[in-house]
Length: 93
Image (cartoon, rainbow, N blue to C red; front, side):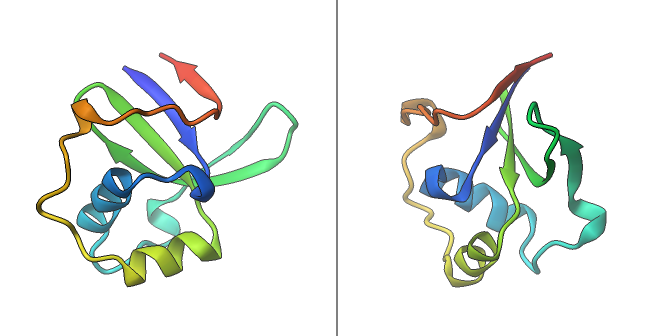
């Protein structure tokens, strides 16, 4: 399974839908994944999964605001049809 680290600036509506669906009441410390990146910086993420990819979305104040303001779009295009070019770190299992 592929793992992709995504920053808020590169967050697609489909991934935001996944996050809002998984964390309808928000998330807390128990939901976060913390690790050190290649620059030895501490990174906090929350997880969103599709059939073939685990997205680790970096936690930030803007992410929380976007999740609070977002309504799940039932007419969103399927994840298979979305271009997922994030220019972010990619980690293979």
